[in-house]
Every structure is written in C-alpha cells, then in structure tokens.
Image (cartoon, rainbow, N blue to C red; front, side):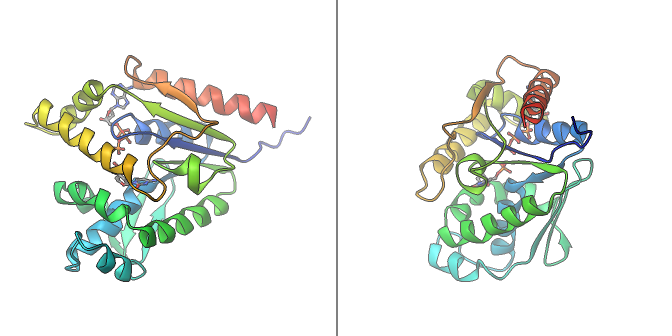
Length: 227
Ligand SMILES: Nc1ncnc2c1ncn2[C@@H]1O[C@H](COP(=O)(O)OP(=O)(O)OP(=O)(O)O)[C@@H](O)[C@H]1O
Ligand SMILES: Nc1ccn([C@H]2C[C@H](O)[C@@H](COP(=O)(O)O)O2)c(=O)n1
C-alpha cells in the first residue's frame, strides 16, 4: 500500500445559503486541499460590468464585454482571494447591487464559457486536489469529479442563516430574495443550478455546520480510500 495521498476533486453545488462556502472551506482546510468559490467569480465579473457602465439588462452588451476583465482567484481555504484587473474585489462583490444583478450576468452563455474555462484551469493546477463550490460544478464544470455533493436546506433555514449575517435584515424579504435568485439560477438555459445524477444529496436544514463538515469529510475520505 502506498503512503502517497491521492489527489481528489470534490464538487459542491446547491442553492444559496445551504452552506456551500462554509462547508467547502472547512473541508478543504481539514484535508489539505485547495478551495475555489465560483460564485465569487460570477460576482466579480458582475461587479466589473456595473463599474464599467455595461447595461446588465442587455445580454449582447454583457457578451461583448465578457472577455475584458482579468479575474484571478486565490485558492488557499484559510484566505481565499478574488481580484479583478489586479484590484481586491472581495468586499465590493458582496454588495446588494451585485447580489441583485449576478443572476442576469451569469446567465449569459459567453460569460459562462469564459468563467468555466478559468475554473477548469484552476482545478487542473491544484496538485493535491480541490474543493470547488457553485451551482453547475458537478453537472458542467467538472463532470468527472471524484465526489459530487448537492447541499439543500429549507428556504426558512436558509433565510434565517442569511438574516443572522446581515444586521437589521427582515426574514421575509431575505427569504423572498433567496427564492427569486434560486429560481433565476435554476431556470436559465445554459448550465442551470442542478443536482448531478451521481451527486450525494445532503439536507442541512436540521444539521449544524460542524455536522455537515464531518459528513462531507467522511465522504471524501471514503472516496480516497477506494481510489
Ligand atoms: N448547517 C448550518 N447550520 C447553521 N448555519 C449554517 C449552516 N451552514 C452554513 N451556515 C451559515 O449560513 C450562512 C450561509 O452559509 P454559506 O455562505 O456557507 O452558504 P452558501 O451556500 O455558500 O451561500 P451562497 O450560495 O449564497 O454563497 C453563513 O452565515 C453560515 O455560517
Ligand atoms: N457555479 C456557479 C456559481 C455561481 N453562479 C451564480 C449564480 C449565483 O446566484 C451567483 C452568486 O453565487 P454565490 O456567491 O451566492 O454562491 O453566481 C453560477 O451561475 N454558477
């Protein structure tokens, strides 16, 4: 038996607020893997479109501009980074304006082609393996991933988690905004939010974050052992 630990590619998908980022970062840290937040990349390109005066309601304008921004992601799970044209975008991409427009920008096929290529090249370069989280990782970006997880949780649980993060936020408004964004992400034509046929579904509604992390770490270790 070899002492070498096999490289492993883990895809974690699911709707907003199901715990993808928190779980993926913790699993990657625990197992010495790289980590990629693909939502941050779609947010970054959306932020660039807004700051450069591109009409986000105009898919042709978005498509024409989609090759212009230089987006770079740092994959250390303890300190992930995202830059656009060399500028730190980690703060601005979380602004409400970006959150409300990211579904429209990420639905444009030219944007998806560009960002998907970037994601595949980052995953390929991760020597020890990587945890990649998003909406279409198991179905489109990395269909040959060693392990695919699809996280779910009730809209109520997800809204409560998100409201806990934002001071003074209203639970009903947060819940409606989540449902609206999920509907847009699930109904777009190009690589919508979807569970891959071979993904393991984990309902996190009644699980604590440490329980979800433990569950996913166990699934990765089982896959590694079977390789
Ligand atoms: N199982 C859980 N129990 C309670 N809180 C959780 C759980 N999982 C995640 N959280 C909390 O819910 C919030 C949202 O989690 P996170 O950002 O990881 O979700 P996400 O699926 O990546 O969302 P998005 O797709 O919108 O980026 C965070 O505050 C996180 O700490
Ligand atoms: N693989 C992905 C990841 C994200 N998106 C889009 C759709 C989301 O609403 C948005 C922001 O993602 P979040 O930061 O909430 O994880 O980005 C996508 O289309 N495909």
